[in-house]
Each structure stands twice: as C-alpha cells, then as structure tokens.
Image 1: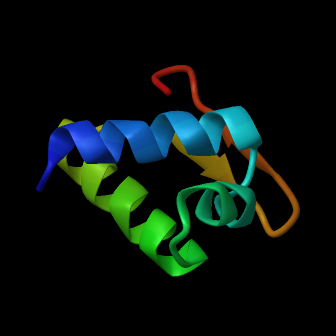
Image 2: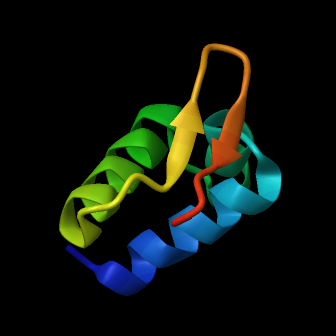
Length: 62
C-alpha cells in the first residue's frame, strides 16, 4: 500500500467529515475512500473513525 497516499486520504476525510466529500475532493469514489481507510486501519492496527449511517467522527487514535 502507498502509505503516503493513504495518509492523504485519511487527512482529507478527517477534514471533510465524510467519505463522500473526501471522494469528491480527491476525484475518486466513496468506496475507494472507504477501502483506503480500511487498509490503513488494518496496517496501523487501530480504528481511525467511528462510523454511523449519519456521522463520521475521529476516534481517540485517529
């Protein structure tokens, strides 16, 4: 995985507060954002976001 790219995706997602907004800003699909975040979380062995159907918030580790 390109860790630098994954960190950019993470930061954009955190700044925008949603996968959809981050995807629009980066020109990719929301699914690509979700997959990138999931891979980064797996690589770091921490959960970065709390996800609900209406809200995306950073965890303490995030």
